[in-house]
Amino acid sequence: MGPDELVRELVEPILASSGLELVDVEVRPGLLRLSVDRPGGVDLDAIAAVTPAISSALDAAEPIKDRYQLEVSSPGLERPLRTPEQFRRFVGSAVSVRTHAGVEGDRRVKGSLVGADDDGIDLLPDGAPDGSSPRRLSYDQIERARTVFEWGPAPKPGRPDRQRRKASTR
Image (cartoon, rainbow, N blue to C red; front, side, top):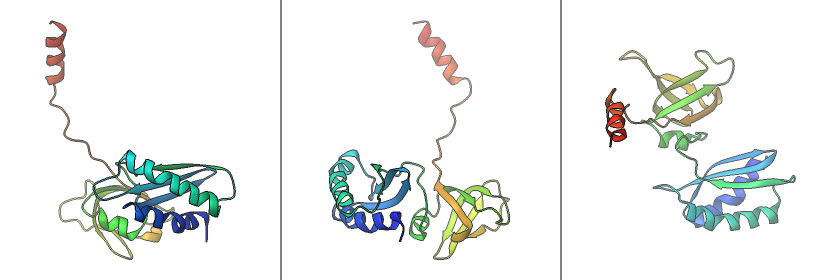
């Protein structure tokens, strides 16, 4: 069992007792990053309340032998997707997927996640013609995936400039 699985086993019960869920564990040299969430989103107060308990449990169990900095945060707007449950939760959302080298088709695909099951995902790439079939990817073909935050419509051309001129003449 690797350090990320050990950390996951250790902190999930602590988070669950606070109404939080562990979204991701990232172990890098000198860094342990935990992404946590809850329905409706997580705030700084919830993170601050649970961090000391996580830190104490990690210090006692020592799942990572080297020195590291603990970082507990929300997964953000563009969150990583790693498990079938996470993919299922975001069906209907825009996602960006990078496949492993050697997988047939484009290596980087952005589009709408139209399905997810225990074996893989169905992704309709941006710009696909109407009536196109989604691209099927098994989880072992996916190197990395994340949700994509879509900004609102662009402002109408010409409007901001006119407002700036009015403001500067006052």
